[in-house]
Length: 441
Image (cartoon, rainbow, N blue to C red):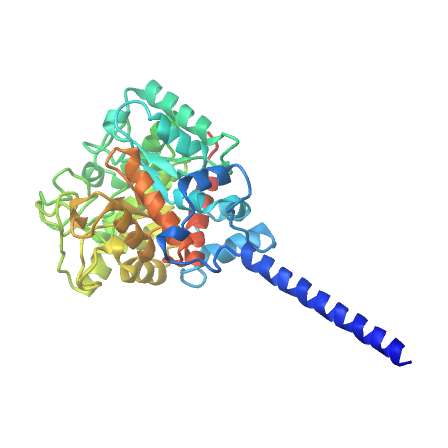
């Protein structure tokens, strides 16, 4: 009997040891599958770019989310950081965004937050390669990128063809954008022919503005451009000031600007072109020399003035489901004494998201702007803007390498958890939903 008991005891010990081994291996596998665990903050822990290139066509490095209905996942993720009950103006694209997000590597997640630019008439081959590998959200076009309507339409087809490559898991239209405000400020010939000020001063402002928005949208869509960085919602104070100098404002009455800006936005979005209202919370009080493209600008306005005058048009545009908001690089001491609006969590997440309830895509003004001269490199500015809550980063110096610098910085931030991972994916979700909401080319 003692022999039998010994055998039973030994067998029990063997089974216990086997169970411990299996449990330990399973736990290690779970840790290895979680991209956010055991990530150090040393540079040596960052995968090399060659590792990322190898990862693009397979599942290595992909970010996985728990299985659930894509619609439910999209709504939950898109609501991160937003006011309770806020509704995305691109809500129809949230399910597609949720289905696409788990397919993306860290480099691709970062690339989805970057708008690139280039010089000349033809996009460089290196930029096309980035697009083919899912590391580009979109492109901004300037006047020297556009030879004619036929030329830019051909370029758009080339870009969207690169975007359709099998190596790109994001099968959604690129965000192809330009500044088509009207009057002197436009990149593509044709509509809108009138400036915002001329629309506001016409004998029938509402009818005229609606017509110009509609025709401007049709003009852009005819060549495949699907995002307009317009209209301007700045309420100008003095004739000839920074915004009024080129007649970019609908007027000096905030209610009028609110009404006309909303009409313009609604009309262009009805043509399949996403509207972008700018420059939140407002540059209407800037004097002529206060150009954020060239130098730091501080607008010392009372909080009541900002909210009752400058922000008023944004309430209307948000209610009308404008898809994008561009945030100013000026400093508003009444809101944040130190940081430009686009680098300020107080302004982006507090004032725009929580107070006004905007649930669409935020986009920076040009990252190379002189207003940011004291905020370091493109990489550092990109990190600060993303931390503030900006979804899209606008790299507009017409060199695709600037966009790469933004992408590399965000990829590193994501891998090292220097940016909140959940908020990062929520921003990408909003961008993917916007892309999914646009007409297929």
